Image (cartoon, helix red, strand yellow):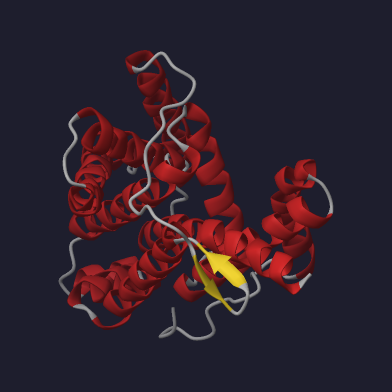
Length: 292
């Protein structure tokens, strides 16, 4: 019984850590720009697709995907902010949010036209037998996904709290006019935020590609899970995004194992409604102006 529960929890943490990484990218963009990027899932799908190209099509070394793809997808996100969203910012925030929705749809349909297939399979990074810990077997792939995504997420929090990059985004999130008076460029900070958000989405795509494959549905799955995890944690809290993603992943895994597989698709929306009705600020909101 305990061994079965351990397997369920490991599976939940594996998916939850990817959800946390996706939610973190959403929250970074929102904290700096007050915009919810609904194209975030499409960026993750592009990251998974780029993983397929590097690992399967071109047969490069796997570590190349982890180094190159986040930078590539971050550059794509920054370019879209510069070309499409920056001119729209002069209108109103609602226009920018609607634009991200249609950007996400356009990117997903571009992938569908490029590869007319339902699913592209990507091999895992690690092979070999799983190892046992306390009677629970853990695959090398699961351990790598959990530790890799959480280490990246924690590094992002450290950079946002203490780095020069994060200082400008925190200032812009706190007071746009005050940040500009202090010498921060709104265009530069916004582009940087979109680059970081896109890089995190691309990295989430690299991690999830061997698990779920590459498909148009991946775009919807990532934006849904990332958005719900962000709301659960508190959409202005980076720490909350990580905890919200882990909580969502474990809840989905428990629901699929002990209720029904169909319940896995419903639990995210159920958690979303409960949190919005009970604690609309999220379970782990930002407590002070200096905490993330």
